[in-house]
Amino acid sequence: MCEVESVARCWMMDFCFRSVCSSYRDTNREKFNQNIRLYEVIVDSETDLQDDQQTKRTVCCFLSRIMDGKNLEVRYDTNDRIAPLMSALTVWENLKDTVADAALYENIKRLLFIQCVGVCLEKGNVQLAAETLEWLEKETSLSEKLQRKLSTLVTKNNVYDQLFTSFSYSRLLDSINTFLDAFLEKCPSDFLLKSATKVVQARQERTERAKSEQELSEAASPSHTAATKVVQARRERAVSPSHTVNSSTKPKKKLFSTKVVHPWKPETEKKPLCVLRRKSTLKVSRLSFKDHRKQETPRDIPDHPKYKSKRRWTETEDKHLKAGVKRYGEGKWAKILEEFVFEDRTSVMLKDRWRTMKKHGML
Image (cartoon, rainbow, N blue to C red; front, side):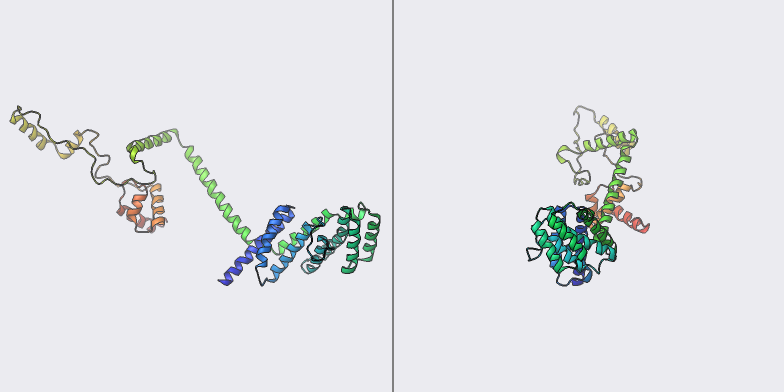
């Protein structure tokens, strides 16, 4: 279980790292801050980070300093003199082995040197620009030529020099995006994103399939639609208003018949006995039980005959049978028969149909 949790945490860290990179490339500061905080919580809870996770942590530290590069009030170090870009320069040196393109590494490093001073001049803080240049001379490998050029610009307070125009802050961001693209190609960190993409695509396909089926049903012939409405109206009239049930639930069977049986009442005592006998004899001898049923009023005739010919199973009944077995399990035929709508089916019929579906591989 510990190994399983470790793998799951690695996936979570990769997802958060990917989210940090995406929000950085979109320059969405609010989203970036949310993702970096979430990533920080997960990473700090890990006591033993793997090498690739440690590298991704360093990349996130670098991106957060670049995102706050122009905010001179933000501090990432205990030393108040170190601005965000100065701190980013130190982190970038730790990523030297990660950057496969040496020219790209040196280009970003040069841009950081220039923008450390350029941002201070752009904010109108010449003293901070001079202190930053002094720190760069002592703590970094700043070349003498670039140092003299930056010193001249600080002295003249010339923020519009061609050096700052050619090596602008936007160019720094573009170069870092190039580095991120190469890094993500080498370390995709997109397992959870790919899995989530498959889930979303499956949902969209189901939605489109349901929509197409609905359109096909709506495009049915008018006669079929009218017949469907008539059948629905008959079913609504057959259900008592005080005992309305759900359309997907079969009504419970009644224990006693609702047919009203009227007792026999003699018409008069003055009728001759022979007439009564003659009528009784005719009824018994010439009319069968079926003939009696034919002479009954439509109200007395039951809705369904006692015996019916064998009827094929419909696709709707098969669906209800599958859903019932899925919900209650195989063998609960009486419960399934009570829960779903089956046209005059019995528990034995449900059992036989399920066995047939299994035999023919319809499940």
